[in-house]
Amino acid sequence: MGIKSFQGARKQQQVNEVRTLRVRDYMSTNLITFRPEQSVQDVVESLIQHKISGGPVVNERQELIGIISEGDCLKQLSDSRYYNMPLEHDTVAKRMIVDVETIDGNMDVFDAANKFLQSKRRRFPIVENGKLVGQISQKDILVAALQLKGENWNNSIKKSY
Image (tube, rainbow, N blue to C red; front, side, top):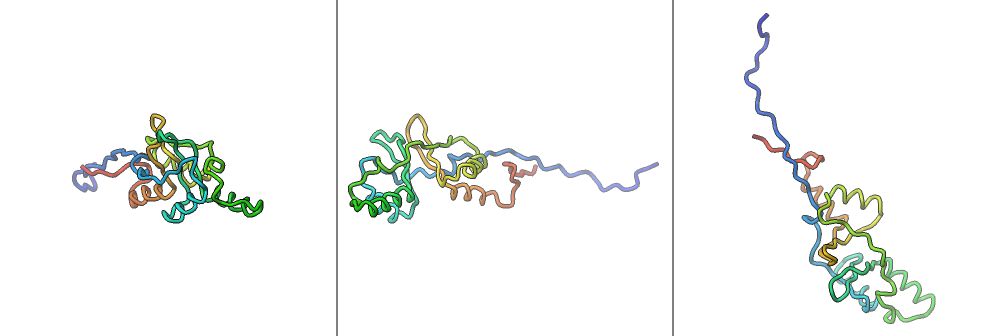
């Protein structure tokens, strides 16, 4: 028996080149940071001015010591109203969250997305050698995902030879 149907030589199949999208490639590095001695009123004004929902708290050596958010400020506002205490006397050190989860800058952005889903956080700071170097937000992860629009979600990019 011979060949019934010959369609010619096969085309070279596409080979997938693996490219991992890292958190460090999408993190923000120009951060609005706060100091522990700042007043909560200063933080509220800064959050409104910069249209952000929170930020890292650092010491004079740029070491991460906490995070303060809109929610922390709202709690202070509520307490100040209830106890009739002026807003400007409360400091960031009293209201910030000190048990801060961080993300490794080398983490894959899709692993980071999963961490966001598990933790219900809006942002994660990135620390290297004890210093704050950046922050990744849920929006940053969405930006990374949009750049892959139309490509495989398995962290690979199609490359034809």
